[in-house]
Image 1 (cartoon, rainbow, N blue to C red):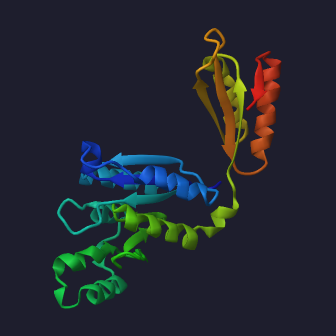
Image 2 (tube, rainbow, N blue to C red):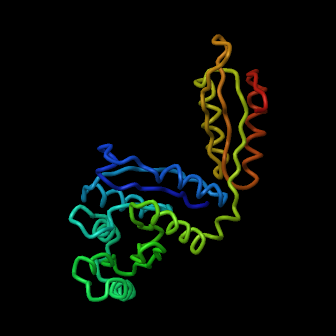
Length: 248
């Protein structure tokens, strides 16, 4: 089973509205260009306990996670310590990272700048093409700055250098228009989810021209032959239920 891909957006400024998030839509497009898809997204503030709990949860599962923001040197940048606590590794100065920041800042190096490369032990560096200050990876979690101009090329580097093999497993989505109430289809959707483990079923109610004739989009998405198999099962079941449907 392919790992799910998640995005974590960190920052009180997003929750308060002081800044508008730009990551979600861009990451969706970035993944789609590589025949991948975003499975979930979470936005969280600058709260240590919440971040630790979230990273523990996602590290325990089969997830590839990109986390943006919270890896600077100010007191409200908590993601490095939260990742360390969640992973069980102590924070330490990354040897290669120290060389990078010392070359970057020269005589202007100080403790705050060294702290930029204080990562959980066993972390791997993510190169930053903008200002050279790296992000880091621990397990399948990848931590990058909140600045889009830095974060996006760093995430692309991770995808192309660590997950190129996933890009050959194209996710397929098939859908039809069904003319009935969504509630009548719930048992069918549950059956498909139970019988076809490599796909997920979705439904999306739509506004019909004829208000007396409800309609929705119903489909399946996933990887491999089960996508077409489950769609055929869906169509056959709808025929047996005498529910009208048509190709989209």
